[in-house]
Length: 385
Image (cartoon, rainbow, N blue to C red; front, side, top):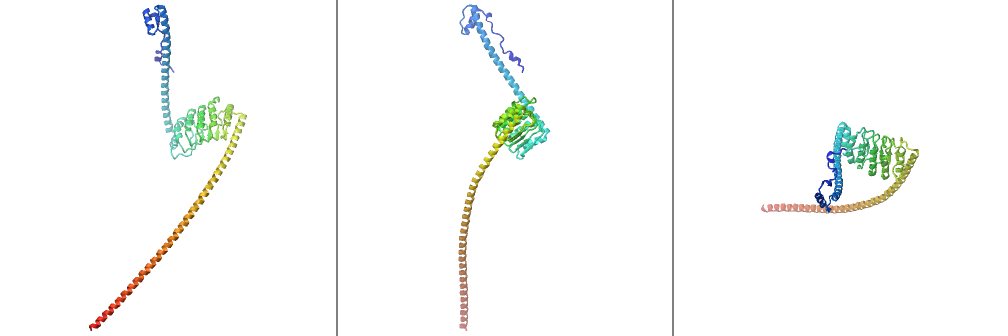
């Protein structure tokens, strides 16, 4: 970057000249600096010139420091402005790309909704669309498989994609075949493997992960090193990625510290036969370890299931006992209620019979009284005659 012209004028060019001062001025200058003049012009001139030279050096250093600070501020302002322009340019590119690719725009909206499917395949993705997809991928919780193969993602957008997936907790399968990924992107995918605990399958085949000259192993080295800290990845495909013999050795070294990776695709990479044998042996070791772990897990599950069965059986037995007691109690209550109903019914019948008898006696009394009344009436008529 060109230094601004106004920065240069801040630098002093030379020290003051003590020889241009009189004996009186020399004495005054020395006294202001707490130095005692000798009274001789030549001696005072030398003494003051030494002071002037020292002050010039100090001022020059301070001026250089101020100039460096101004240059740094100027460069920082330029970087901030360039970054702002880059962000705005990226946003405009993303909007344009979304407008020209309705399918990708549709999937970006679906990613953060409850309608998101478990598997999505989006081919022919370009860098702006990949950048636009990063934020939704951080938030989606339903997507389990993402296939972006045969897209022109590129190294920079691929790196941003990897960093966004560090926050994703649902994707288990990631397909990135022939996406233009490079050393920078694969290095970021190494960070992904260190932090993500859900990915089980990753394919980055047919990408020049070691650069076009196949000599840049910085990214693939970080990626393979991350396998030492990952315990969920089981399948990895690095077919046709330009690993070469050095890349094969890096993979062998990392697999020595990984016990969960079960399958690695390494074809078409010019890896040495020894590295291939070592990789195969390490994967066989991991498969054997997984079988043992699965057997232990099955045994533990069987024990847990049997223990739970005992608990469930005891609970079922207790439930049956309680239900039987409840049933007996209900029957007891029903029988008692039936006896009470029968007693009440008998009492009602007795009361009904008593009422009928009383009504019968009342009718008989009424009939008797009526008959007696008729007899008296007839006797009265006979007396009158």
